[in-house]
Image (cartoon, rainbow, N blue to C red; front, side, top):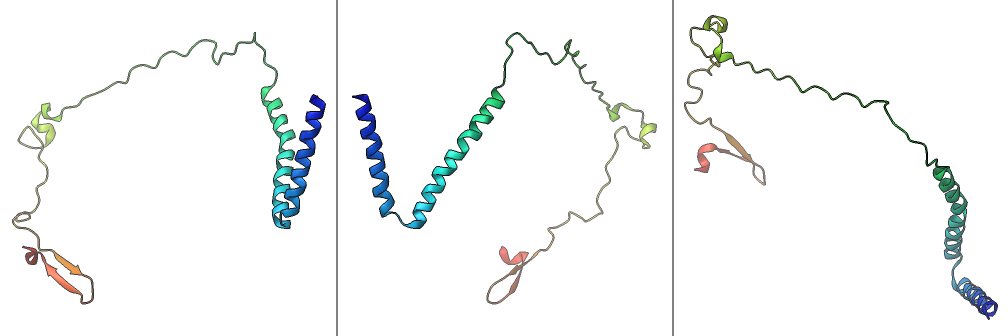
Length: 132
């Protein structure tokens, strides 16, 4: 009974392949055959890759990277230098704290004038005062 069922399945698959083959264009048939033969060609290669990567495993072998683990690294050394506690003569000034250079006088006296160029059909310049 199993033999009869197997032969019937093979006959049905062959009949279906013939019917589909007659209705397909030559280009579609070439693509289908290319896919089938490509998959068939990849099976032996896949089996070789699996066999090569699997290899023979020795259950008793233990692998260690180091004979003894390396010693832990020492904590980083942090030095804090506070220049405010240094003598005034070391700073080169009369006071205790160093001073940053100051910008020229009048630098922050007013807002700098800015100009904006409006790009369009007619180019125009707008001053900063025109926005207020």
